[in-house]
Amino acid sequence: MTCRLIAETELTDEQDAQLRLLLAKAFPGRAAHFRQQSWWLARPQWRLILSDDGVPVAHLGIERRRVGVGDEDVYVAGVGHVCTDPAYRGRGLGLDLMKHLRAVLPAPYGLLTCSPAVQGFYESAGWVEVGPGVTMTNVYTGETIESFTHPAMVLGDNFPSGRPIDIRGLPW
Image 1 (spheres, rainbow, N blue to C red):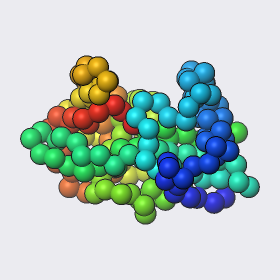
Image 2 (image 1 turned 30 degrees about the vertical axis):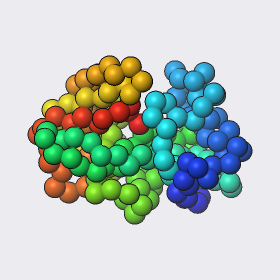
Image 3 (image 1 turned 180 degrees about the vertical axis):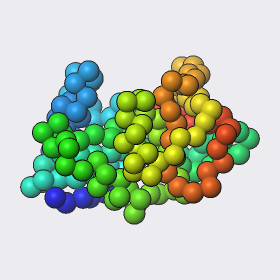
Image 4 (image 1 turned 90 degrees about the vertical axis):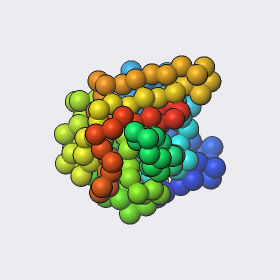
C-alpha cells in the first residue's frame, strides 16, 4: 500500500476516473453522481489516496477554508469523501488514512460532518464531536442550510467548541 497527497490540479484524467469508480462503489446511493464527477458539493483542493498496486482503495478529500466559529474566524481542513473500497473494508485502511491525514493536515484543525452511523469510527481515529451544529451556505443560491442531525467533528487540540460553526460555503 502507498499513500499520496495529490493536489486537485495535478490529478490526471486516469486518476480522476479511478477515483470516480472508487467513490461510486463506496457510496452506492450516489453512484450515478460519482460516475460523472469525483466530488459531491465542494471540490476538494487535495486528495489523500491509499493505493494498492496503483489502484485507489481508500480516499478522502481536503479543502482548506476559513470558517466562522461563533464570532471567531478559524482555518480548518474540511474533510469529505472519506471512503474505502468495499472489497478492502475491515483491514484498518480508514485508520491508516487518518494517520496520514494528521501528518499532512494543512490547517490547525480538521473538520467534518458525518452520519451517526460512522461517528464511532472517527472517534476511534481521534476526532471529537463539537457543536452545537453547522451552518452551510449554498454559494450559488445564497440558501442557508443548518445541520444538527450529522455530528460536526474536529481533529486537533483547543478548537473553540460549543459555538455554532458556519462553514461559509458548500459542504466538502
